[in-house]
Amino acid sequence: MSSVHNVRLVAAEELSVDPKKLGVRAVSQMLPQHSFNRVRTVLLRALGIRISATSCVAGTLKITGAGSMDLLSIGPGCYLTGPLHIDLSDGVDIGARVYIGYEVMLITADHEVGPPPQRCGRIVHGPIEIGDGVWIGSRAIILPGVRVGHGSIVAAGAVVTRDVAPNTMVAGVPARLVRDLREKPSQ
Image (cartoon, rainbow, N blue to C red; front, side, top):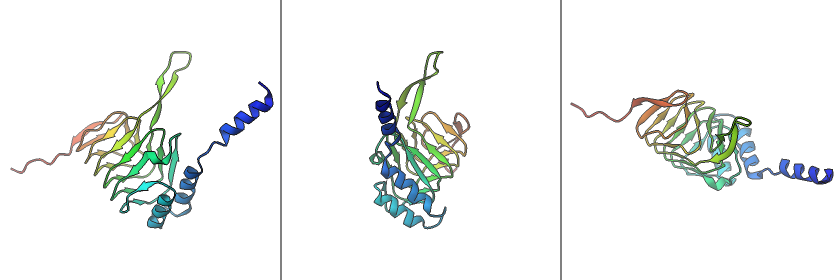
């Protein structure tokens, strides 16, 4: 292979950016955190993000991954604090009335564990589904293939590697059940 061909391949790879994803980051970043939230949200909708009319993005939104923005859906009544990193290597479905704290990461791509010569194995993808009424604390990380059940709380700093049952609180690294949030019957 000629060096000119190699240069073309590298240039094509480096320049294969999604202008919509760049626009999302630029638009969401140009306005101050917790200011002009409705303006930011309307502009993000204009760039193609499916955000319900009563939801609000209050900070920077960084979208990465090979998938299109059609893979992202944000339901009604949500408040996304930001900065929020969403990887769209697979789908991300955020239900209704979901509140997301600062510096949360929703990651839909990971690697299998490889053999000793190279532990970082084959890339795998999995969708993320966040149920209605969920609260995700600051700096939490939700990994591929995870479903967070309705009415749940993911504590700040938690790393969620498996499904979270409805109406529970998880915390820690990896996240574990710390509390059942179902309403107790009155006596």
